[in-house]
Length: 472
Image 1 (tube, rainbow, N blue to C red):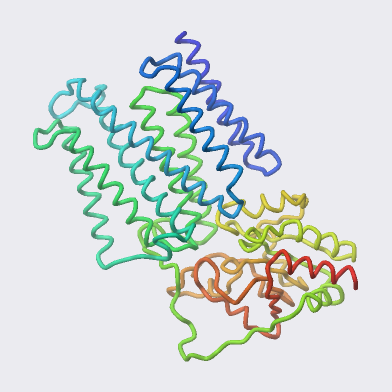
Image 2 (cartoon, rainbow, N blue to C red; image 1 turned 60 degrees about the vertical axis):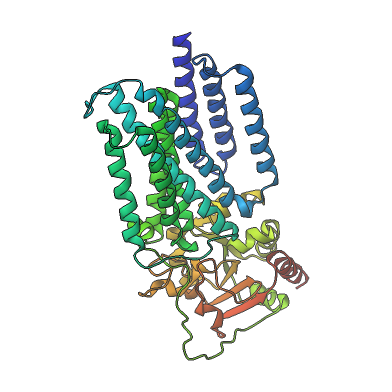
């Protein structure tokens, strides 16, 4: 039986690896997700043959409850709310890992760890894993709750900072280290269980304080980092429980989440340390200090259609969060067909964090059966804007805002952007002149010689443009 469980764990780990590999492309992401889920099912079944802590009925009840919640959430949550769901599920995973570590502290106490601890003994290693599991899991849970609140815009929205915040964070971290040392050394000053409880509370506060000052422009990076934290916490739980599949799966999630976080911060031109510890503000200062009112060139769908039909041979479309909110992916696909029937070259420019999480726009466009070869990454298409007749920006702002090129205190300063302002003509399809998620106004809105503003819901506006193009 023991060998069979080990084989099951190896099979589950292989399925995790294959599943993650297949998630690299929208074409294979669905089967990759199913493959990983199958690996987790095998791992859960294998655990039932290894432990006698819970009865089969208890496990079955837990599986049913979790499955129902997951299935209902997957069916009801809109694509626009997917980042919030990722943050929520990620927080649940972090909390579970922290609670497992805390509960297992009783077992570690029974190991009679020598005073001062001895590196390499079972008690010392278990105690280190418990402390790390509690800290990382609690930080991930609290940070994910704040991220969810920010994205859902129900609490702690924007950037929240207070004087001495970094010093407070440092003091909390120092307190966690000191209490952890008491546990490892078997100190009689404070009981291990009480010390662990205080560590958990301090880590929860630290997780909240680390995320509240981070603005909306950086929230995708924060979610990715918190996901990596949860993976590491799960790996620590694996050490605590001597469960190989938890160690493997947690390490995979931690490693992949860390790599993704680094890639995202690099693509946004933001040092990761600056995002986490720099208290980047979500909103910039008012650039219009003299109170001068700005005006934009408002146009109709017929005006846009005329420009596309008679003044454009090459067209680049930039999808953004507004496209997802309006569920306008099929409308944009209809526009592509209409323009290509007129002999126009149409491509899509994909910013790494368009929307509110990596791949957000790619998934939406895939739902509308837009060919993958029409989707170009930022670094592959940015130089082509200089020779492009018309750029259509649908519900995007931050990723095309020229202010990002300017040095200063803007929330998006230094972020690589799509060079849409280099094109001959730019058409924005959006409801109003309101700034994007980062709260930074876009001066391109007010360039009346180059920019055309189609104030409309993305779906209805695009449908009107398609109709006008077809009618000529």
